[in-house]
Image (cartoon, rainbow, N blue to C red):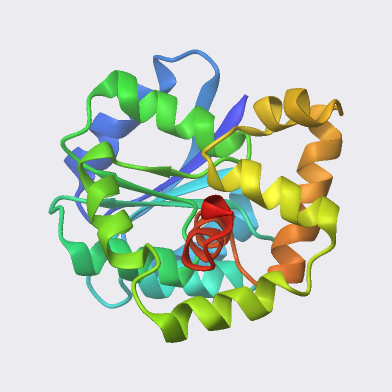
Length: 217
């Protein structure tokens, strides 16, 4: 079962999401919180695999909560939810280290699929926001490209190969097929790769690869 913690200041929203997720059969909501200030304690208590956190909440918002979560020793995957498809929310969520970004108008089917996708170690962004992400991050300036290239220069040939496949949007299972290795081995290599690049997740790694022009070579 995929263990999920819901963080949203609106009770009806939490109840609705709980009903959707638990109808899937392989997802259980282990806890809820109504404010970002409660997140760390709730995670410590419930030990979720994934935290779904609203971006706009009183006292401590979802972005601050995400940064605090990912700085701790126990690091669940974090998916940021928002009612508004604003560019600044997307960029801020990714900069905070979120593994996913979902607009609340997503269908129940796609919400369930998003949770399952993030649980496998892949990243997910609402399709309506993908174009904006590309426009913002794709190889826009020489300075950014040079900095990204410097980071890629520190990688081994194997790590660069894994990064190229990841940046093409392949899942761990698909990368394993391409490289002829097991999915568990791919997960280990991706974790090693993220550490070598100094990034928090696959989205940031893929962005770095694009910025450095890895997919153009």
